[in-house]
Length: 401
Image 1 (cartoon, rainbow, N blue to C red):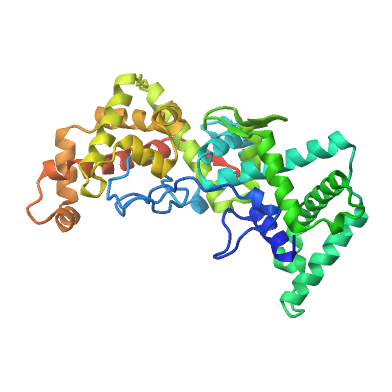
Image 2: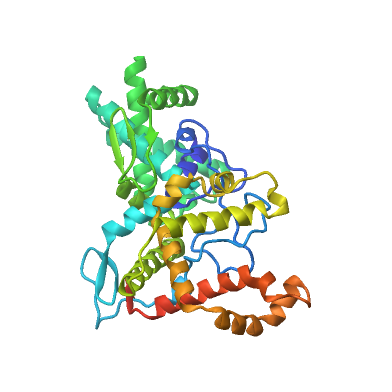
């Protein structure tokens, strides 16, 4: 492992994506899992998602999701001195608290099939694996080895930059000091384990190739098995389990603050929709869920670019989810409730008024002779967005971030 490798390991802890062209040499390569299918980009008519969604399929589908922030996270209502949040709470809706435990579980589930989620899980897996291997052998890392590794990587970083910057500066400055120290300890621990196993006196003499091979073999031997996104356990392996909440906590450290804030907005939307629906006697039903899936299937199969692709295939490729996992997700259940709220509030006359209000942009999209029937899917989508904003506007939200 050289200085560039160590910085790349640190980048995994600090941000969800690597810089263009950056790769992970040994042994940090094990921290980078194969990326799952990317999520589809929402079309221009939709509000922006809380999470940036890279394009996966060239399908110009009206995105079914409406659970997106009604406002920019930076404009969200913050906690105030008059309405402080108690410890352990990240938000409240009309006084009902949303705990940090609930949020980190949701965050872990929301990213379970995303590259960032896989990345966080792999980090935790490798850390747990190394800790177990070291404990089984009674091995510990001394400060001298960690300092020696720092000196080695510092010299490499200075050489690579012509002396301009060192390891800490490249890692992000003083704010990254704790993470840099943790990464160094992890790298040192692996060297100690492999040196002990191979009978090498000095852990610094273990080669990068050997470190990489050992970690690959250890991971294969431990058989990491991921669970469904809504499971409270993210994954299990021969040495134990990794809770979903722990993955969520790691993601809170990895992801940009604005993304974490956006996911909180998403969760608050789900809670608000559920509350409003319950107050109006609207319940989630199998028939409504089937109707929503049928509509999504129609959208996929009616799109020329998606010829021969079912919604199940589209979902797997864009979201990394199975139909069963989608049905169990809080977001889909809230989506179905949102459809029911729109059906209850938007009759034919209101949709006709909305059609007249949006006639100009609809004509630009569909042509000057656009009819209400042609524009109906777009009108219903707009109705969902407006209903969602109304739901969020009907509750008093206090949030920590």
